[in-house]
Length: 550
Image (tube, rainbow, N blue to C red; front, side, top):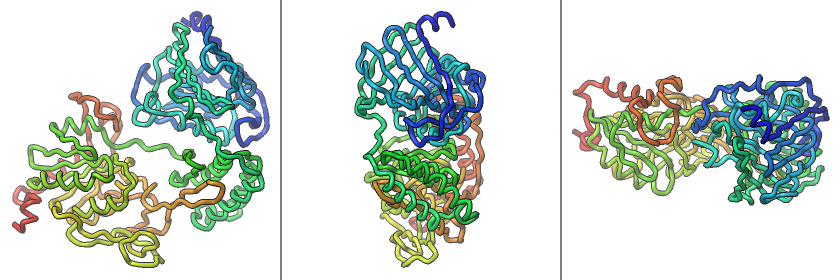
């Protein structure tokens, strides 16, 4: 097998030293030692596993190449000199690699794109291929934080439905290889390679979706924007700035040297991201124009839900555009919010009307999107008996329900039909945006309990602040507390924490509904239903009976 591969595909990677750099095109830090990546990244994932896996590279996954060459005879050849390499892996199994040449690589092909210069490229492959793509004789360790940022940005920008599951990359079959390049001219070229046969196919569906660099920027202007960001972080966020002002100033000074060499708005964003990464807070984000820069310090938490398992537990489920609804044979209702948007109010009202004969309701917010705060308040109000103060901002300017500058954040009962029976609210790492706001409000409802895992807090109270040249920072409001005075900057705590291991779900959690297997299960929902069944039978009055005063 190995001889067949070598006969058809030549893959070379050689390593060399350089100096610290701010962006692709400037040499990197000196390499420390050679490495065999086949030993560093051991194949542990099954071939063809189409389930998305977390791949959060760290500084340990940044390498230095003296040169790089990929040749698939006769259809494709890429040649580059010294380059940085960032490897994305899951539990040690390599899934993707970003190659960031110091100087544009040469693209040779009889297909579209022949003769063009390549700024950077992303490879997606089977985990066992990492050693063939980058042979040990040419790889050396590096600790270039900017290369890590660029590689993560590149993979995130190029990740989409065909090569991702639930928004995450997955392991390819052994002979599959995707070569995804951005050219100097701004075009994106994707080549689908069959390593077994040596065939190469050009995929032109995303030719205009290369990684944008943003407008050019003067170095002096970039420095002033960076200084403004440092000042703002020191005033509004604190963290390291509070704990050790001297260390914070030194960090700003060191990262400003990177900012002084940038040539575009995106490169300025990368310099700022390097500063934010030291604060270890995923809510701190940079946006350069329309491009989000990824958080590099803390990996995304796995959602504590398995939707096939939910369906398996419930049996018959009715699906609407923004929600699911169901009932158990024992009289417990189930309402899952999928999205909070324009149609949610109407669909929630219809669902609650249909579930008024249930004596308890599971409100599932474990994976919900949408950013409509007004609609979130409308939905949450369907579960309230009276107006509640669900959060406070010390020193705020008012006491109205409006959020901007308000001392008290309030929500009043809403809608003609309200649900007043016991409420079991399921939350977790996937409870974000408007869904997190709903959870924060309904926890004040009578006979409500939050179960699952703490919410992330990344969208509950944040503000985008322009620092100049189209670059914005997302900052959390560190003063907001709940009605009991507990700070909410890190998300909502739960009343009952239900820890769950991925093995508890039979298959991977957060899997899309693709067909129920008898072994699929959702332990969080199961625990919530068990808790509801602890209520004595003589106390199981339906929501309709409670609404009628019976």
